Length: 383
Image 1 (cartoon, rainbow, N blue to C red):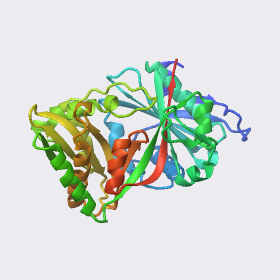
Image 2: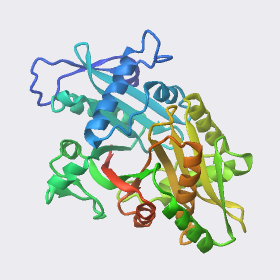
Image 3: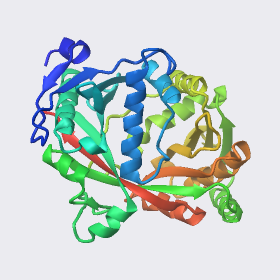
Image 4: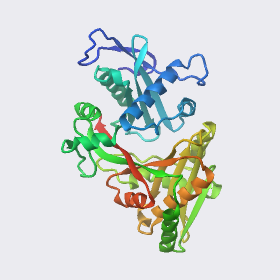
């Protein structure tokens, strides 16, 4: 497919193995409106509705739903991450959506999201959308495609022996799940399984305080904890950005291959501006290594305009050369304590951890995080 086809013209495709013999599928670029109240916002609202439907169906919770107006801000701000979105129509009805994201400065990776209305799964819409997104990724010079799919606890409980594990052996997804079969059929490999856990922000903090005190004593005077609500103080911006750059190389990644994502102080400020536009609050807990002044650990919490909704954990990282001093416990526990003071009405914090990241899982379990669902992380070489 030529580049102008990917950007500007609709394609017509016959669904693969479709039970709806008369279906004619059209995949078109999504029109991104100026606002959710604009007269031309209909496709955008349908797009978000499908994403919410699928996320809730697959995960068993509505915790991952982002309001349409907040999400729209990110679609308009693409200086560092390119985003190309598409809708699949059966007649006038939008039955599926797809999105391709990739770092503008990192040249190998792409992230693909596909969401098909539950009543349209298996009709070939998903096959056509995935092929469409992969072709565009290749046209953009991307060599890898990554995606994910949630797994509900009851699916894991009933799967028993029929499980598919990544080569690390940590975690699993049901072998006969719809999305497992779909990704395997299209040449994707299960590279990692992540656990989604939640902490009750309305419960007791006694254990959190005890763990923080013990971790501070273990770390000693060489390590200084810091906390702020964005915007990031000038004295921390560059060090914080350098630590974010290490996320793709320092976290356990199983069989997944990632490019390093370049961050600097300007990119930190840019992201904070997007959060402010969307009405979101973000806070960062960090640790400074006093002898060198290096920013060596951090954890980020974010909540949307509705402060009574779920809080999301963004990145949590301790640089490899500073592990073993309980810095992960410090940023996790101090962050939770300060966040509850800042946003007292949020019910829970949710976080993702690789199943092989036993250290961080130990910290989260000890402080009170409990499993909610799982996410299979899939990747494919696009050669």
